[in-house]
Image 1 (cartoon, rainbow, N blue to C red):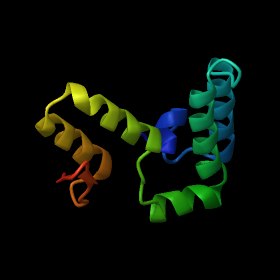
Image 2 (cartoon, rainbow, N blue to C red):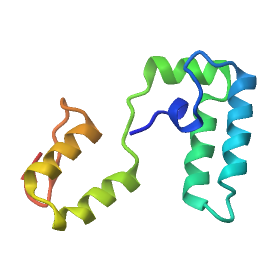
Image 3 (tube, rainbow, N blue to C red):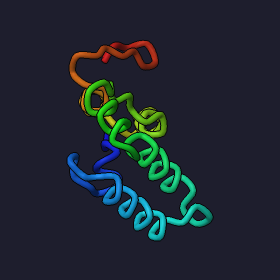
Length: 107
C-alpha cells in the first residue's frame, strides 16, 4: 500500500508548497472526469498530508489501513491464484502482525 507521500511523489520532509504543487501536477495528469478512482486516491492523499499538522499526525499516528479496493481485488483475483500466494499478498497488504480470515481460512 502506498503512503500519501508516495502517491503524490514527494519526500516526507516536503513543505506545504511542495505538496500542493505535487497535488496539482497529479490532478493535471489524472483529471477526475477521466480517472475518477485515481483522482480520488490523489485527493485523499493530499487531504491527509496537506498541512504541517496533518503530516505530523500521519507520520506519528497513522496505522496504514489498507485501501478497500486493493482488498477487494485480492479476493476477486483469489480464484485464479493458489492459497499460498494469496496469503503472502494479504500479509504484505495488512502487515505480518495482523491476522485476517477470508472465506473460512486464516491468513
